[in-house]
Image (cartoon, rainbow, N blue to C red):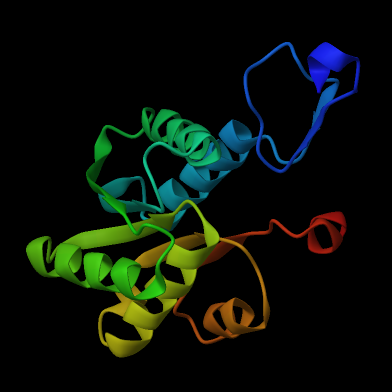
Length: 168
């Protein structure tokens, strides 16, 4: 399209290329940074964190995780113990989170860098309600189900991605 003189506008996911007119969407690095700052506050600037993405190769999630990791640099007592891939599959994400929590019994936080694993983390916290109060969960996305998760204490923070909610 670009070579034929058709303007290219990227929406939601950016690509590092000069063959675009502009990008409209979230600054993923900055939102990851903000998620990291909030996680550090929630955990008292110390603890073990699980990071969950759909794929380590997805550009927007790479940027979010990079921002999150950079924010935690100022907290030497915080450690990312695993980065899990949920493959944009609710059941697979849930299983990976459950297995990681079984391997790492002293996890203090879970950071979900995309929407589907956010719902998976909520489901895990609901099923492990005895652990939910001590584990800070930061998710991407916001909707009725995740709002209830926030209200009921299964989720600590939601990074809003819908334009209407972002505007509010």
